[in-house]
Image (cartoon, rainbow, N blue to C red; front, side):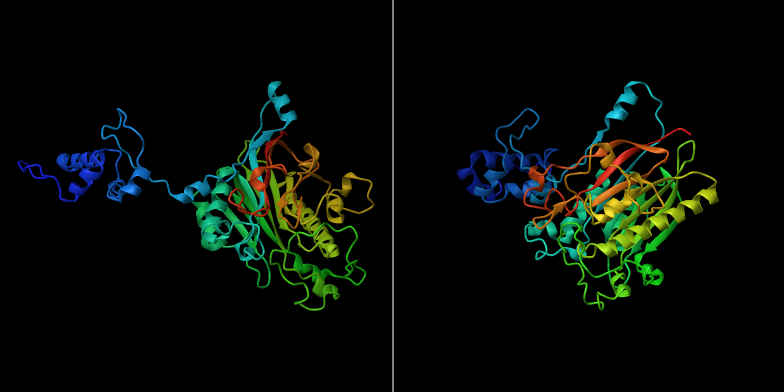
Length: 434
């Protein structure tokens, strides 16, 4: 308004003045003073011009000294209500760690590791997850939810399975949050794979190696125990979620066809930025899903340990050190089945020959989770973190998982609280002094 101009009531206000005197006075004040109060934004002024029936829904009750105009018209997008429902991670200190801390034990270098099957978007269809809210399955919502969850862990290392859209989405978005990464895509026409995200400020990547379980075909011998019969000790059926038909690649009774499941894994050696420059080997893998093919899953588990053992020897000789070893991933095997028993068999009376003596992180600290995969078709533990006995790292806290009666998993996953059908597992670790 120009100086000296007479104050006039704008024509549109005349009708408003008759129907809503307070709102008319407010709009008149805006024009008369030729400016907006600090708290008002353009969309607020727009809201004030809405029909009165809508405008009243946006108005806050009564004025306050900090709001001389007496009205404020806030905007709260509906999408924020959904995002705010997302579960937040909680790491619970282990009793031994608390006792040592109270006793004044010297603290070593600490780092956080998380393992998570994020559910590849290529497998996300309403037909596979009819129990899930359809809006929670759409890529635009899921990608933001998964990304927010990954960042919320504040982890130094993350082992991710079923990672797709790596180049187009996750790599660049995680880089903006201070993470570098390595990735291997599954063989054949598969679009997902395994990735390791790590913080360069916490550790330096020294060496890496990929595992292609299809290589088992080249090492197959007729004496190997790879058969087509279903084992009576296989894990309960996880929902296939659109995973491949076993018969379309050839005769499933042919071991060379049977072993070619396009599964992969990653090995990486990191030098931690602790004063001792400790070397940590991390393996990330995703074992074949079908519970009826326990022989293939067991063959992959054996191949994994052989590759980790070879990699450990290479790193030990190259850097003249004794590295710690952590193996994480989705093993698609439940506690007590053949694959699980093999992985921890060096700690039992089993006659199986294993190249590494492993212990399960959660089992050694209170027991395996009640479940890490939660759907109406299957609920159970499939994801694990294994530690090599003699490693110079010890867990100080564990990532907590919801109980079966928790409201945030009711009806099955994924949902607005958890963007994957799996739940993340993880821990804080402390490097022991040499």
